[in-house]
Image (tube, rainbow, N blue to C red; front, side):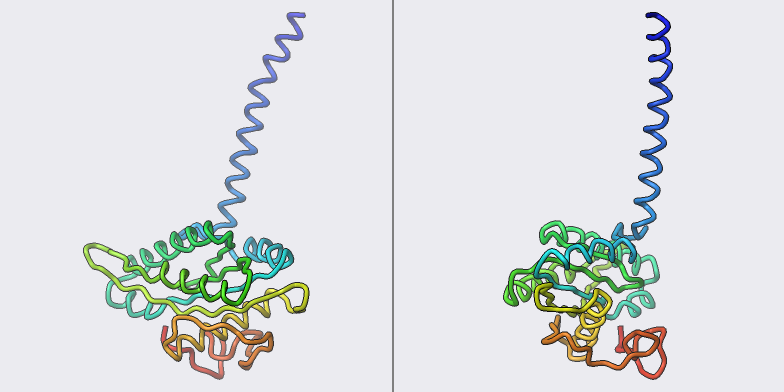
Length: 217
């Protein structure tokens, strides 16, 4: 009996060690799925979750781009730019918690999200709330910096629509670009047909493409 108790007791530290190892491994895997500056999901993790949201019912895809971000970097330094990005990440995280949304930092000052919506009116209300959340000023080293954003969105219903996440992101991106050019806070796609030309499978004019000029960021 005592030998059995000894064996069981000896196994406790080993079990605890494996549990700690599994916890550390889980944390490493989760960290790899997160953007280090904002804590938002990386592209692959976002795509995995976004497709589940889209399959579950009526939803919307958003693309968000900060306005005049390069100007902030050039005037106040990259530390100020990082502070703006980090603050935007926190605000998007809070918005996502309220709206049961999934959010990603696509890179630089560009973000995307997917969330369930009930109607076009619901989408308009959500966009207004999202704009209000993002555009709160940020204070960095005693300087109050204005934050602006252009947002594009597209609605999706799995019962009637037959497009993939990549197309929805492209459509939302087109609307974001149109909003930036027109000075609107946000615009939504009226249908699921891309309007802009494509270069290397990306909207012509985006950074990393040729044959067009991107709107001033």
